[in-house]
Length: 394
Image (tube, rainbow, N blue to C red; front, top):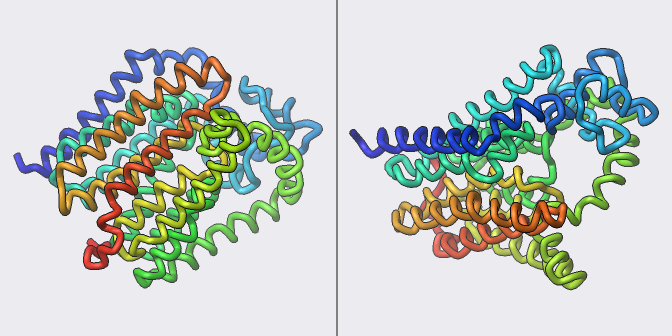
């Protein structure tokens, strides 16, 4: 058996091992018994379902009552908790009953993530079975994967989109890159808030200026459609969603909020300063190289102002890219990075959440996970920052 075939085999073995953890840990039973009609996806699904039934998800006088007719999740905001394009984009899922839509969303998302990550592994580390095994384990058995599974969150779909975007940049496919990152921006723009400029710079230096046009066009089209069909959503979203979530930010998994809880106000300022430093360090990497893509994808999550620990699943994408860069000069260093990242996202994230998150009703300490990952990636890829000869390409 070739090493590439062995890598494929071990990747799926890692996924199956993670799936076994879902079953043995009770997450499948938990999802089926308690969460199908009360998890995050139920709340996401309620918006497009209400829209199809003729309701306005941004009517603050009626939304909570309307939402509870479709599912058991108690809305935390007075209007639908996502921007106006989301009910339109997810309307096809709302055509089927919630249990069916939930299965399509989660299992379909996992399948897409597995296929996209397998393609990424084949492109960057085609003959590294151990790394493939660890990537598969992270995808289905890490702490963020378990949460994404039973909460019905976006994480698996985001992994697929980020992987597709990274692959498209590497292969210089402008349209695919632009549309993949536009989809991320429409779903969770905070994940690209810091990294968007760096990724755009990488696209331009690869001669992919059209990728920016595709991204801008797709986003503009989605926003125009939402304004035409749900004209009150921007004002309602600002008044009722942002106003509710900004006070909740200190519970989120961002580095500044973790340092705020640890050290008080000085920690918040230190965290903000570290975000600026991280962006400056990423700028030192040759934007034509794969190392720059790994850095910006990593920094984007570490510096996002509002995330929860299930969002950290997307770190598996820059992990594979970074391992691919490292494997060119040190396969051992690439494996060590993969092992360290897997430990952070499985053991480390679980311990932080279990020991502190539940007790404090806050996930802020889990914001240390992407920060530590970013530190690892930066230290290991620093020698490759000027590796212009290692240009991204098929």
